[in-house]
View 1 (tube, rainbow, N blue to C red):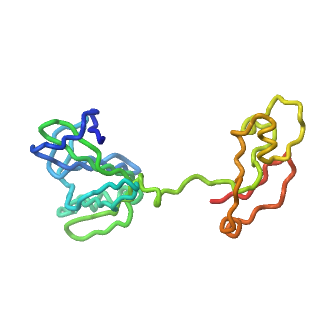
View 2 (tube, one colour):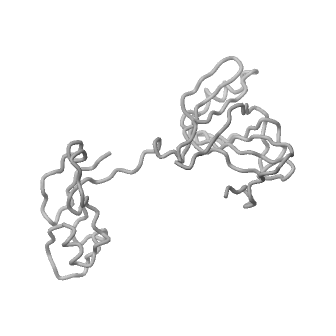
View 3 (cartoon, rainbow, N blue to C red):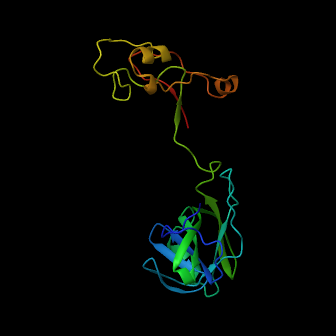
Length: 212
């Protein structure tokens, strides 16, 4: 069940006033803006520059609509911020503030991208951080054998009497380090075609092809 920042349950039967808040962390500072002025929430004042006119949906598949952040620029002040600070790629959080409860819930968290501007508004597309299709994972070593250097801390077999290792799954198991084996037990034809395995390396080395 979704929760508010206080830990309370999300109010499903709330009929009071609602204000939407946006927090943007640039390379210089964190900006606090809202659809209507908020004197104080979480220790911060929110200025009424935020335009919230598009719904945000979550799906069980963890994919999300790409929300947007729009900020008023009628007096040109926002344009000044754009030139002085780095907004593209900045972390952003959109909140729904339940005024009568003095509490808020998070609607969307992500990164700003694809800036667009006109005389009245400046807007960005938001890439949600929970969308696995848009988040780069860490590099992964592709190898049929274990890639840890034998007797290293990562290998785990640090005090045994053996001096060599075939670096296969059976060898890790025989040395009581099954959980340390990080090779690919099953290598599909598609994977082998895209990332050909490197030549076999001596057991004492940790050679592997790094997939980025």
